[in-house]
Image 1 (cartoon, one colour):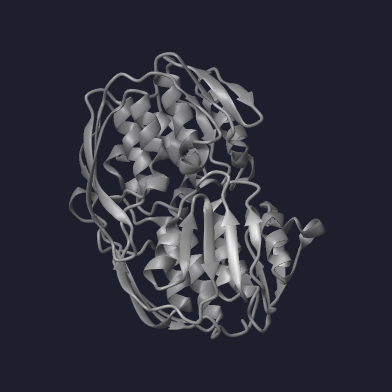
Image 2 (cartoon, helix red, strand yellow):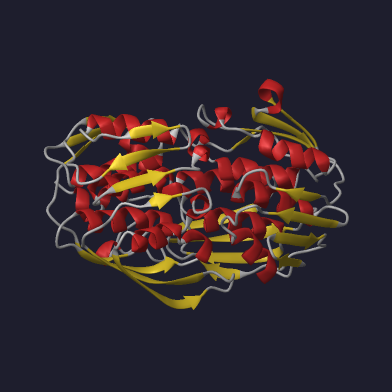
Length: 439
């Protein structure tokens, strides 16, 4: 349990932990490359460590050099690096035991695309939460490609049993906007005979496509169609991972909720498919300035975000905007409760099948803090200019719920306690060491 004491304002310069989505993917693509790759500023979060351990069991040598000490201005740059000795697209080994993805849906869904084309049987499972997250969405297209893959409860849930087969490329229209589903199919397509074509109804985060192109894969976009040809090998690489915009969102929200706040977040990723939260906040009237500095060798833009407290207005957010800010929707409920007017969020039904039912978790906790909110099947409606009250809250073992309500607690009247708050380490190591939460 964690106790949060309200504060008056937040000021200063910050560095946020490295991007979780990118960290997962550099492990995966380095493991599939032919040779030695070096990744600096890697995120050693619980989820990313699950990905590392899975590939170690698949025969990949991975050296980790961690530097956990936090420096000036909460500076975690170069917090760690990894060296990966890739075994190539066909070089993975049969694991000696069941693979464990922990709490990480990204690990399970992306690795399943790779395991589908091996020459061995493998089983991948996860923790209590992950074992009830939907996997039918990846099983269907992988079977269309020729994979032999089975899940629990009529192929809905993990554990997954995968018997590697020779795959064929397919043309597939995503039924939902999902970067994990898209990446799973692309990774399977790397070792599939022929062409793999994916059509996105709504563009989701594109880290996998950017990295594949940088590493020499034959991949291109035609409108909302992604076209990938079979590849014999991927080049090893050296790169660094910029800060996670999703982690930065908690600092951004705190600055917008606390009067007289002014902060700067340096070396944070500015991938256009991840900027939905910032773009929505600008529409609400937020005083936010974004400055691009450069691009990494894997084609990921990064730069600086400056945020200053100011008045905000309620907004209507629909399905087309959700994929670029899916992780930040709970925060928008908190911000909407303080903005002027009404905030309506719809088309976010995917939140029901995250680490927990995040719509239900937001509604339950925000009501405990004295805020009126209307729950909808795919979102919620919340009127602004309400005041938070300190309360006893439940994280539901979900890192984003824990961090969202830590932000709400900073502007509440009275102290707040969050059960299971340590789960924040899933994506944001050092979250509770931020100066915002020091007694």
